[in-house]
Image (cartoon, rainbow, N blue to C red):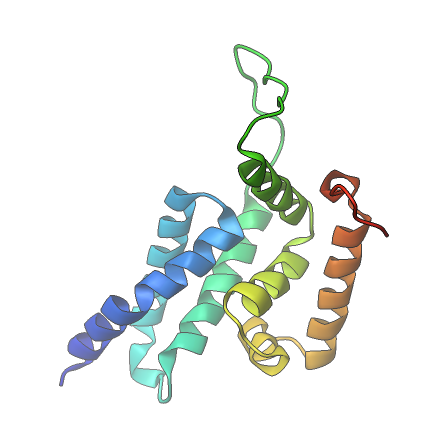
Length: 164
């Protein structure tokens, strides 16, 4: 099996999972696809050096690329022709709750959001997250605790009957 065959097999089998991770980080399918494609292109250039399971290596490239993109991108207001409409009570309460969670996650610092995505959506252990992000397990634990604390204090996530 050639180098390109193994890479093609990897892309075919693992891309859906990696794309989901990219989407959870960006919350935009177009950006997620770009992020995954960029990460896979970077992985291709180093594919010969990957000995074991390549998914953690590619996931680390994905997280690092995501962080780099965020640092370079301007995140200010975007003018529109009309102001955004106020949200109204709707039978789609579940959709509204999901959107509130997305907004709360987007307010977290990038590292904290990455830790939560890798922990709860990719189901990685603290050690795997630390390896993926290139930080210590203690940093993962502290970022995880800080992220959950911020989410608990986020007033937009107040649910009926919930107590603090």
